Length: 338
Image (cartoon, rainbow, N blue to C red; front, side):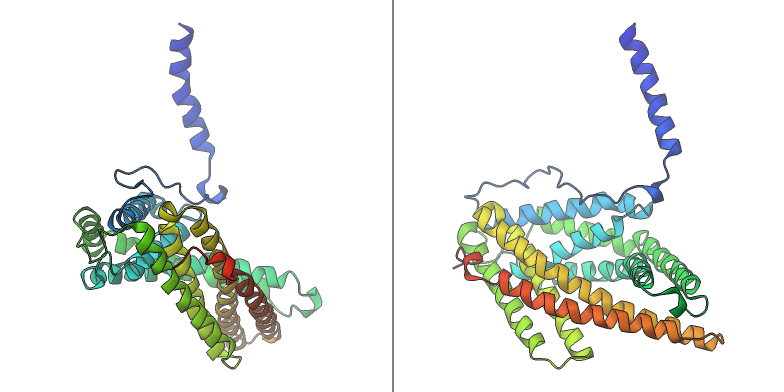
């Protein structure tokens, strides 16, 4: 009887907790665990095709599992869906000798489309925090006019419009076709010339190529004059570091700790350069806010100050990126690559 009573009361207890919970007040979700999916845990001795397909299946599963959370607008769900898309795109681009790129280009393009819709929604989450954080460092006597109110009111309607466009896309036949194409790609893949070769031989070479592109773009950014051109160059370097990171992730089961360590180093580079890109976008937002304030007859001084704070932050992050890259590119992190 005791067990029966306990069983009967548990659903009510859960219902009470769910009723009181406000999903917008919940703590940010950790990165989704890669749930076991058939064919996603190959042996270290597996072929390159088995290893790459396992990674693609895992990320496709993560993408699908996040859709309900994105529709519910749960914290961090948009960001995590973007990450899954980026991992899929990185794998399709990096392992062209395993899954021929001409056969995966359409899927990669549709993933880019979906990622492009997620971006503005994510910006609507990040930028307000970024600018509000800068405002907290400004002496109150330098905040002239309703600066905080204007910053707070600027982003919600823009994010709402972007989110509406995103949910409309999730309801569209185009999105359903993307999921179906992903299923076909992972279940009946077109295999390339190196698909049957050992993953231990094929995947490290792909990571090396991705690293070399990162190195090239970091060098180009360093020699680009400061200003918008360097900002754009660093953004491209960030994309390359991210691709190198995710390519190494896909190789971990074949190469072990070496790929994991390298992936962590590339993540550090990606993070610093991502913060730099956030400062670039925040400057643009500060400028737009200043223009809006001026047209409304307000004093725009504080928005210029906000712009300069973000500019100085970008300079610090550029210096930090050089140091992080110097450590991440040490030869000891790449000895496992051919």
